[in-house]
Amino acid sequence: MSVVYLTRHVHFSAAHRLHSAELDEEQNRNIYGLCNNPLGHGHNYELEITIRGEPDPVTGMVMDLKEVKAIVEKEILVHVDHQHLNHVALLQGKVPTAENIVMVFWYALKDKIPHGELYEMVLYETPRHSVRYRGE
Image (tube, helix red, strand yellow):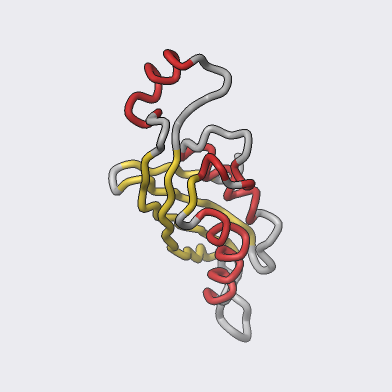
């Protein structure tokens, strides 16, 4: 059989503040600049979830896209959409950078994909800034 890569694209809106408890106020301001605003700031995030696998010989699908969407909504979107990411349980203890967010999302989905395997996630914080993660 052939291996194919199935990608589902979703979006969510959320706020965050880039601030590390490991740094003092001045260090945080110097490193994160405007993103260290105490009130936070928002983004319209785009997330791509790619699943790798062999198409089922009967259905022709690696996985039903409706099922992918339902899993992503349950495991990720319900927790982060229209939320302040510094205050959601999924990201507690992490500076909510795009890098940390995509890794947290990866581990939230990793064992929830029933067909194929989670291959890659790409998180777009802005149209010009994205982070790609493959569980490495």
